[in-house]
Length: 282
Image (cartoon, rainbow, N blue to C red; front, side):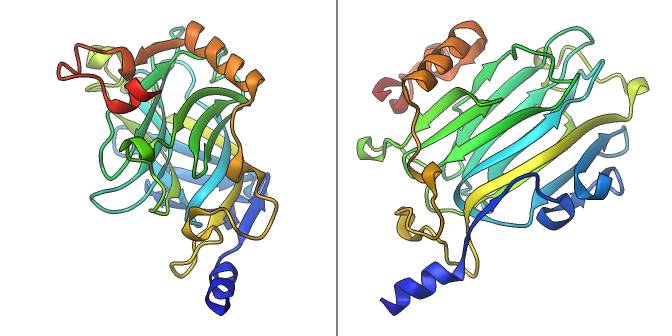
């Protein structure tokens, strides 16, 4: 009992909305191209030909619901990638990705999603958005609990990756992750497979962030408030068992029917030896 109590006290379930970037993240690279302003309410990342930039959360999570409001690079953003993701360290890392692939002025961004477990990914799903993500802030959310991962945009679920370990399919559940974001150049592949290059005369390119919120089990000194992935910790933690209700499933089907442009689970040519097992089990 004492050991369990120590485990629970070693980390706390954090719930922070409209957080102060000064308190919750650190700009880790970019030589001044990342800036926190407005008393900690606004963060911007810039990209020019000399350098990209990025930041990461100060906290490390083992399960959580992470929200970020982002306004993407406007105008000709071809060749740029704005990445927002959770990732664990090491060579057999886990990762949950949002990547926004820029495009020519007037052409839509591509929203690229992926899930890595123990260093293995190849689970891409891509979407076009149903709004202009450069004209205002929009909320991009990752819900990660022991049963599933749900990607959402402005509260609308676009993708679900379920825990199917009982069928021999890996699921990220043991490695704590931090939140990272970066703005960088990937002109060799990001826009139309690399056919459209970055126009550096438009630099610097800038993405803006606000409204970071974390409702999560925070790891501290190797201990988590969700010991053994059971979801036992202080706080209500409704996200720890959250799943899509019928309305959420219907909204996700609407997005996937109208705005999904690539799904690895339907790409038989890419997997001549057979589709990944999670595609067949879904």
